[in-house]
Length: 157
Image (cartoon, rainbow, N blue to C red):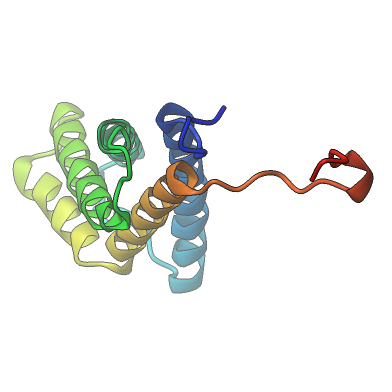
């Protein structure tokens, strides 16, 4: 579960970060939609599939990016910025491609992507991805051990 340097294995850190991204993004998008009274993808006739495909594309892109970048011996916390950007671009690409595949014309598909990109929903997606990227790096770099009670410690310590 840990590497020789003491941190978590990159694959496991990636898995935790991707699950964390999913939870943060889904919760955040839902609450933001509830508070603002707006749909996440506010184009009529689009349906739920393009948004779900876009979200799936963002999850896959984050997993691929983190799996690649976390292999470096001491990854930098600065990778959280590209992770956020990759998540947004992947979401937008998945949204447009899925919208075109379900039969929406190109103008409405691009309007949906543009509307999402310049909305608070886009900001929230980038923030959730950046937080998950930072967390993954912290898991790999940190050499923390789980807390233990006094009676669990070795006498030699």
